[in-house]
Image (spheres, rainbow, N blue to C red):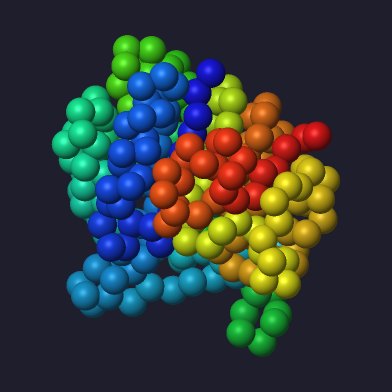
Length: 269
């Protein structure tokens, strides 16, 4: 069995946390690991420095996401693959981990269907139909390639960009990419590292939650966390045993999460 760890962009903004690196090194000594990373805020910062203002949209389900036109998907790929991914790989190599940096494009690790149209809620609260741009709905994960790498003692580090049916670059949500990868490789657990201590209800962290409870509270959760809860639900429905949404700012964040000492544990139980 393997563990998938999703490192949120909020954790990466100030560089790769040495505590996380050492924690990952220790776990990798006895457990297969695969990392998926975010970095959306870094993309936004660099895109706007390049003069490309970023637009964010909200779906009828309350999911907030980046609107990705052609110019944006090129910048997104450049930053995620060329900067964020390689910085993580470099930090892991420094402590002796045989990390291999990839994106969903490489080996068709993540294939997605380009969304033709998107339904959004505009600033007046009305539903609107807009062009889908270069956003993808994940439909396939190349689990064979990922398992081949892990079985040969490599740690895949995946940037969440998918390849479309016509070979086009597609933006896919990092949390949901991690969920689909976890389901594809039949991971035992998935850990989402973020900058808060778990799922908060009335500013209080929830320690444990059933799948049905997660579905019930998802509409009540604010932007950012709602994607992690949705991704947790998807991972569990694809056979992952448990999802942990945890703080990446504590000591030994991954180990403490999988030992249920850090974050919110969501399971089928």
